[in-house]
Image 1: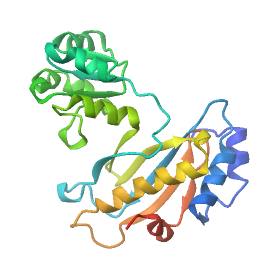
Image 2: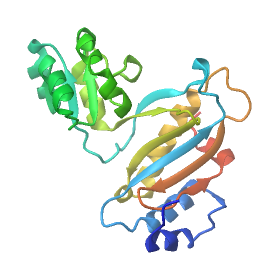
Image 3: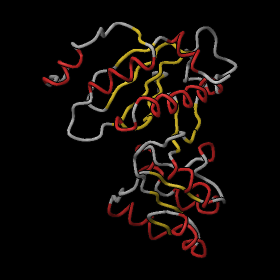
Length: 236
C-alpha cells in the first residue's frame, strides 16, 4: 500500500473514519480535508447491489449536473467535412475525420477529454477503437456521444454532463464538482446524481440497491454516508 502523506493522515484522524455521516456533515469534512494547493475535485463513489457481469444489471447513464463539474472539457468531434465549422462554432476543440483518426493512431495523440461523433463517422472511429476504448473515450449512443445533433451534445458536455457506469466490482465513480463550489452546490449536484442512479435501478436487481456511499476530494480521505439516509436525498 502506498505511504500516505502527513496532510492526508491528519485529515483522516480528524473524524471517525468508520462512521456514516449526513451529506452536509460529510461535505464539511471533505472541505476541511482538501489541503492541496489546487482546487480539488469532489468525487462520489457508490457500491451498488447489482451484478454487472449480467447485461440486465448494468447501470449506465448520463446527467447534466446542476452546477457542472468545474472542469473544462476538451472535445473532439468526428464529423463530415461539411459539419466541421458547425462543430467548432458549438464549442468543439477539434473537429474532423480521417486526419484526426490518423493522428491518434500514428502519434498516440490523446489531447482531449471527450469524443463525440455523428453516426456516419463511426466506421472511421471504429478503426481507432482499440486506442479510445481503454481510455474510456469511445463514443456511444447510450451516452449521447454518437448523435446527429452535434451542437446539443457539445453544449451539454460543456455545461457539465457526466457519465456514470458500474465497473466490474459494481462500483460507480463520478466527479461532482470542485471544493470551491461550496457545500450547497455540491449537495445539489450529488442529489441530482443519486436521483439519476436510483431511477436507473435495473429490474433484475434484488435486495438493497445502494450498498455504500463515499464522498471524497482528490487528495483527501473518503467520508462515508449512510445508504439509508442517502435515499432520503433522492428526488421522488
